[in-house]
Image 1 (cartoon, helix red, strand yellow):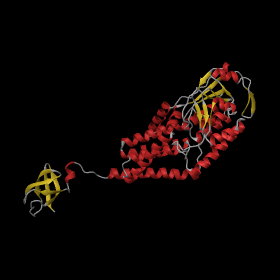
Image 2 (cartoon, one colour; image 1 turned 60 degrees about the horizontal axis):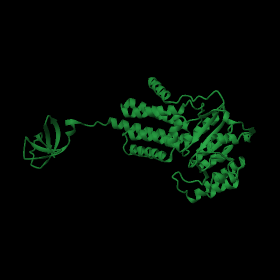
Image 3 (tube, rainbow, N blue to C red; image 1 turned 180 degrees about the horizontal axis):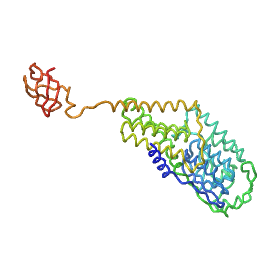
Image 4 (cartoon, helix red, strand yellow; image 1 turned 45 degrees about the vertical axis):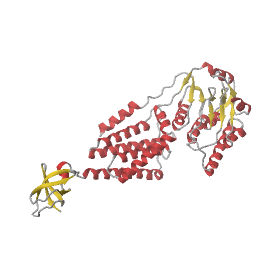
Length: 429
């Protein structure tokens, strides 16, 4: 077991990203948001803004149709609490900062757009893009409208316009956004943007900062880790839905057919992943559950000898180790509330128990094979005979010997009691 754990740890270390090194000199950190915003993007931006030490400012390129509200709020919090200026830039021409993108634009210290871009249309919708039910929509609109107004007040932007962007889904071109005092400036490219903000005074984390010429510093593109890229993919509502469905189906199949093992094992892993994606548990807790479930499957396999179960368990444990110990993040203290963790752990243990009991029962059942499988099977006599004759059984004509003292008639049913070679020993029914 110690060797197995060592192998898992080494595998996790091999596939884990190296600690992302930061330049020792001042620089401008460039962040690209060029797709829908999900969990991975939120974690990436939260990480780089909180951990970067030598950065002079962040330049955030925006071209996004939106994203989930929770991840957007995490990014907004990172922008608001950043110790250095955050400059949002809708670029290139034709790009848009719609829905969640608009919130990021107005929450930055400097909001800028390139000619030919647009922003707005921030009315909340379902993950499928469809409208929410009326009651839920009203609540969501009121909440997001409040967030937009708070950001407008904090960054001294047009509160009425951002409110309408949420409640009435209005949008604006770059020039319209500038005229309505939603953004600070329009710039054709980075150099023009940096030139226009030289000497501008802004409030950064409660203190007044005068922007210097950022053209004097190298620009370094910051990239998400492998962990963040994986989370971005699986947290897409379509992918998350498939994972949840596979988990539910696997557990149902295991409950209906105890001992099949594979559906139950996959169901447990997918169930844990779904709970993380639905934010029922944190990533750290979910990773810990994957480790425990994986080790449990490996232990079960030591008694059952099923290679498949060991493979699933090993993959689960390695994935858990990878997401639990990620060197691109600072150490996290794991705290679990017993009230919420109790039912969760109980459910996982119950499902594991069902898998164990079903598997043990399945492996204890002796399945006859070969000639042994013919014993007890009923056939049909092809003629009258007292000692020897022929019977039809399982689509084949067999030579048969009568072991009883009673004669066997044609078309009479007989039961196999013994098999020797190609001869069946039968008795009449």
